[in-house]
Amino acid sequence: MNRIHPLTERQEYLIGGYVELSCARCAAQVRVRKSSPQQTSVQWSSRATRQCPALTSDEQLQTPAPTCPDLRRSIQHAVRTGSLGVT
Ligand SMILES: [Zn+2]
Image 1 (tube, rainbow, N blue to C red):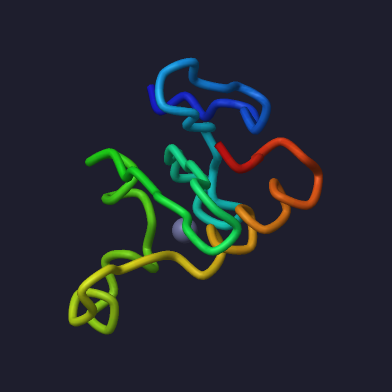
Image 2: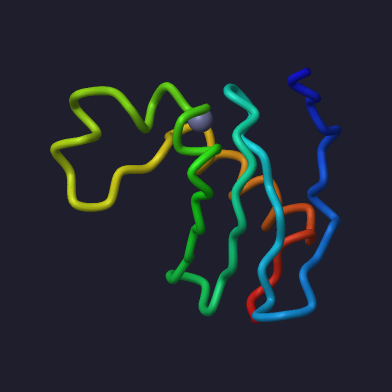
């Protein structure tokens, strides 16, 4: 039932420059866009939000912009390997 998709780092969205990435640990799939070297936007789908244990922890729910530390690493990796560029 729950099909897990292979890594789709290179699957780029034509609209808005978003790239689909999945978290290295929980495999939640999100869309990421870098508008500058410092600025990263992450779009969480409701399914990804439920899938990521880091995002639903009590600690994270207290913060204004909860994020997954493993996903952050995936983003850095994508930047280094060139699959996520500044758009
Ligand atoms: Zn995660």
